[in-house]
Amino acid sequence: MTSGIVFNISRYAIHDGPGIRTTVFLQGCPLSCWWCHNPESMAREPQLSLRAGRCIACGLCVEACPAHAISLSDDGPATDATLCRQCFGCAGVCPADAREVVGRSMTVGEVMEEVTKDTSFYDESGGGVTFSGGEPLMQPAFLLELLEACGGQDIHRTVDTCGYASRAILLRVAEKAELFLYDLKHMDPAIHEKFTGVSNEPILENLRALSCRNVAIRIRFPLIPGVNDDRKNVESLGAFLQGLHRVFSVDILPYHDVARSKYKRFGFPYRLGQVQAPDPARLSEIAAALRGYGLCVTVGGDNKDERTNSQAQTIQP
Image (cartoon, helix red, strand yellow):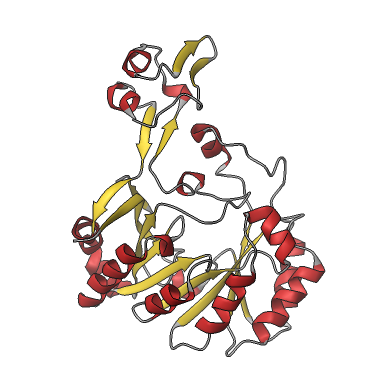
């Protein structure tokens, strides 16, 4: 049975497709978006999280580290990234759970064991399973086998993707999924590369190809003030989508910085500085502009078909 790296499983999710869902987050992403809410997912391997506020300064992690990469000071624990071997021995001995390994290998069977716990909720709400990340298409064999297993149990399948992948893999996945949540971050290739690390050209071409297939697609537009909220980009997005094989719905996802603390926990720089959430009036203007291209537009996932009163529950693999 195929296995892959999973860094989170979120049950009772309500914004990752229709109905009540289980969202399976796969490790690894070819993009490095400045605003990413899951920075721990960018690398292909499990990552070490440090919650300095939980540290009780017992020193066990210092003793356990074979590379002598950890030190304690009045400012709290510190890890020298140039020495760390990612052996995660420090996390295994931490009595306060200040050090935690995020991501682990799971088989298809182990993931399905979690997924099938909520089959009754899927049936009642029209929900199912969403595969997200990271970028799920980076683990194609694992993803395809998971989709096959879900299909065998008549569970609705959604794939949340940035679209930066092999065309062949994308279209194979399309044969086994009912819905794609497809991110479009910027229409200008150079600006897209500046803020994500890659050009948008294969992403746009893949969407052209996918739009000709018999699979539902919702476009997700993460709106970042000062990055992609200008008139030129919004108009380019609308014109591009209008010119595809069929008309799509667009979900505008307004920027917020709730993931800022994650960057500190994983030792990553937060590159958006003091960017604030979009002004509501500007959000309304952008939504209206996109509707002018014949698109159905929602803001912040506010879709009546996708709303319930359930609370999200997270399972750390």
